[in-house]
Image (cartoon, rainbow, N blue to C red):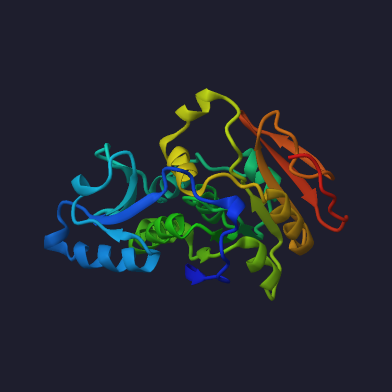
Length: 281
């Protein structure tokens, strides 16, 4: 099952523009000239419609760049020496040490039996990889081409590592596109659809969130169409839709069947079959 697939091409609506820190270009890492990374960087820049930047020092100050390094693709602030990338090795390693269990709130919300799951807002793929390692059959959907490139690179590296590939078990694939259209076009609907919307931070301290989350937010912006995605998900999911929200946040839509609380987040579960009604954001 593991692999990368292109979903339906959908133009980004004007109410979903990337954040002000959107990626401006692709550049090779320091070892690029010796390892063919220059050519790969040029190819990725052409694919994404971004500038090719020969060196990170030539990138505009205060912007984000994709860096094609020998150890993978990462997104980085021009002022930083290191960035973030999709990396599933630590998740796969946690399985053997007993750190991943079906008692975790996310797994309880998804359902404990092995199921087919569409992660409709995959981001850097942490939750999708976690579910795959635990035995779920996961399709990770990401509509931002830049974030999807990071996710694809992470999956390629995972599949090239025998230990990580064995932990994932071929149960994770990436689809690039808008989940609303991908779900509507699936011949076999998934058992569960998982949605982790990107909402505007409520407090200034949210700017201190984990680096990966912060950089992804800069790239993709917020998700004002989250309610529409959940509506489509409720129409297509065979068993349930799970929506991850900060603790204390209003539900994306009315009709929550049950909620499972984590330490900082809440998982709202919509059992499918009931009509979806628009609710507060």
